[in-house]
Image (cartoon, rainbow, N blue to C red; front, side, top):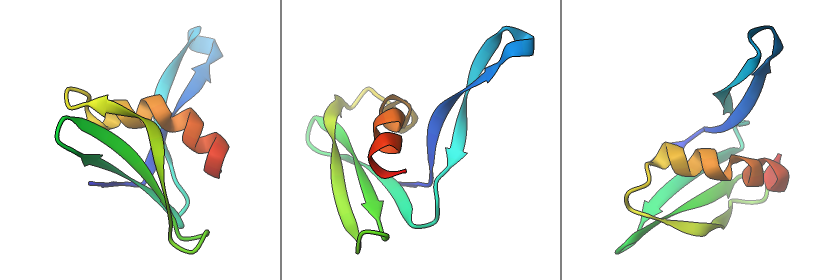
Length: 82
């Protein structure tokens, strides 16, 4: 499945807390989560880099939801591509 967001922490000081919220990716980049036999992995597709595909480690067990994987790897994606 194709995704066009990452998940970032947004602080709300007046509420003394934070929320994890979706952040829209630029139109030149998107994510896919792919399943193998017993694992899932996330791939970043970048049209800015001439249709470059980068598989992001680590892989995850099938029990993880796609959104949980994106949430876990959002910081890495942001520092590598944005």
